[in-house]
Length: 165
Image 1: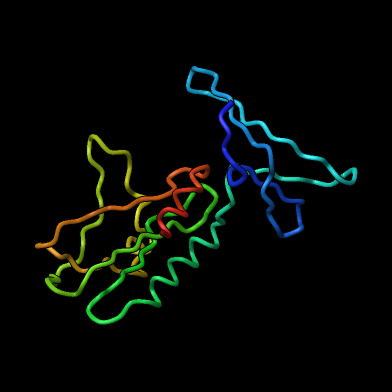
Image 2: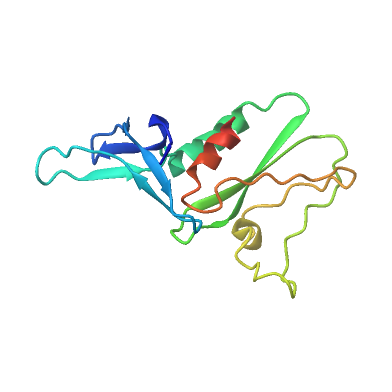
């Protein structure tokens, strides 16, 4: 058994509004790239609903709040563009932030992504631009682009904390 430490297992009594660390968490490697997460938990009242998590949860609403906080902190020559990239399967907004300084902006907007033979359909990307309710940010042709992505899949909660710093 490899000890993971208390920070790796969490529980909450559904509706209680608070997550608590669980003690005695361990992980047993099965040798085939799988394993067993083991922990002890003493259940309370019959009928109580309890949820467990591998790490402290990072809610969708927290992600949106982080975006709003970045937008509020923009000062000087720094500009941030907040775009609706697409909607998740559950209909949630997946936003994309572009952060840069305002030097070197072109008069043309960034292009939409279009279908290519080696790429799946892109018609779901930038729906607000496609329906005419938003525009893309300007191009910055002389600048290199860096894409930082966190939490591509729902279980990648730790990536949200990493992106927060």
